[in-house]
Image (cartoon, rainbow, N blue to C red; front, side, top):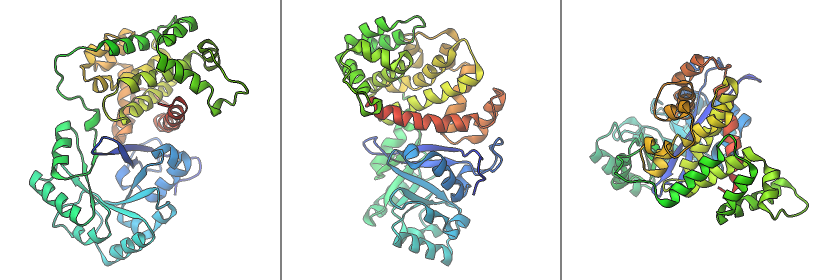
Length: 410
């Protein structure tokens, strides 16, 4: 168990179904007790550390009601430490390095009897892990390591046994389509936030209008009057603003009926952020998780920006993270997207890949969300950020994103 006051490090990777809806999240975590070093392997961290992380951050914040896939190495599995976790909320993922012994088989049988779902990580047909199949509800197949015909044969066999197949390390849309055709029902990897080959197309008239709204929101000298006028020309956004300010979370004694009054109550920064979420949701044609990731990145970058100071300001760092997946959301090259946004030269260069300070902040957040702890730590050190600023920013951003999305109805 971690010591009181230690920082916990938890990121998450979504597991999607064939409709690109989020089924659950694998929790990626660092097990080192040395808070500032990012040493050790997150995949091998103990369930005790995950337990501490769940207590510190909370299941609701981490998974928003979806299943959490929690990794178990042999020692943790046999210690029965996972019994502190709610079987309705977790899938216990047995790592590929676990030796299949009589003790392991007995523990798996006991866990299933108590209502836990078990997943087999990096399952290889014909390996000793075959003996664990009677207890498994999920198996993960590495699409980069296994030949396509083996994936197809294994997926068909698992289907007959009532076991769901998760294709992992799905890094491209082509990987996703091949795995789906092979019979896999769940998919893990960053294929949905990797741009495919772009065709020669331009922004639609509606997309241009939405981008211009975002551009106007982030003009340094924008006034409430200007924003009021912009919102009044969009019935859907006006409705969302009024619904948000009249929600139970504000505890108002009377109903707010005008956009002007709502803006005065919410404030410019809140309106900027919420409206950005709504605009992104309207533009997004892919998985809804993309919008969640953009907001999470935006808030994480903003919190890190508070430590750094820059001509971009904290709002600029929020916009940086928010725009980092616009090429994927819109199906356009990033160079075409940034032309429509009011970015200063530093932020525009960062989005286009230049290794400046904003780009380092964004890269640190992306590495952290993917569980690349050493890479994230190296950038954190380069930026001379306070110890564990990334862990704190990401955990706070997860809670903030969840509460904001619910309040905003995104």
